[in-house]
Amino acid sequence: MNTFVTPLPSTGTAGTPGLDALARGGLAGVGRALWRAMQASGRARARAELLSLADAHERTQPNFARELRCAAGHDPIA
Image 1 (cartoon, helix red, strand yellow):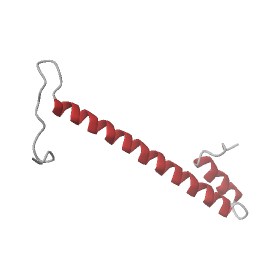
Image 2 (spheres, one colour; image 1 turned 60 degrees about the vertical axis):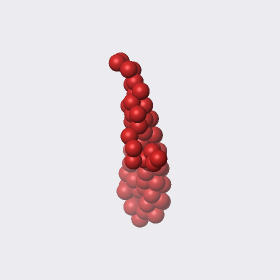
Image 3 (cartoon, helix red, strand yellow; image 1 turned 60 degrees about the horizontal axis):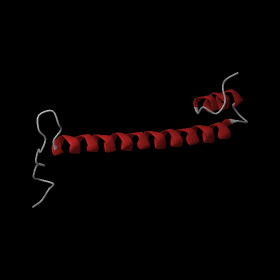
Image 4 (tube, helix red, strand yellow; image 1 turned 30 degrees about the vertical axis):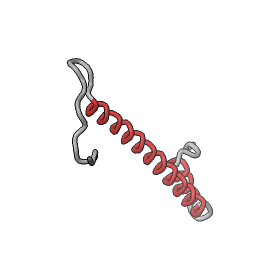
């Protein structure tokens, strides 16, 4: 029997969740955790890129470099 195609049996009684509801809730939790991890990874990559650009422009455009660092959350604009 292939459990990926057959629906989970609902063993819940009135007022209690069945297996299908528990499975959906568990999958939703996994999805939310995965989404949060992807967001954190994206923020880290964006921050590193902004700081790299700030370093590249420090000598020629110091104001722009400062704004890039501020956008990366590295130092506030004074």
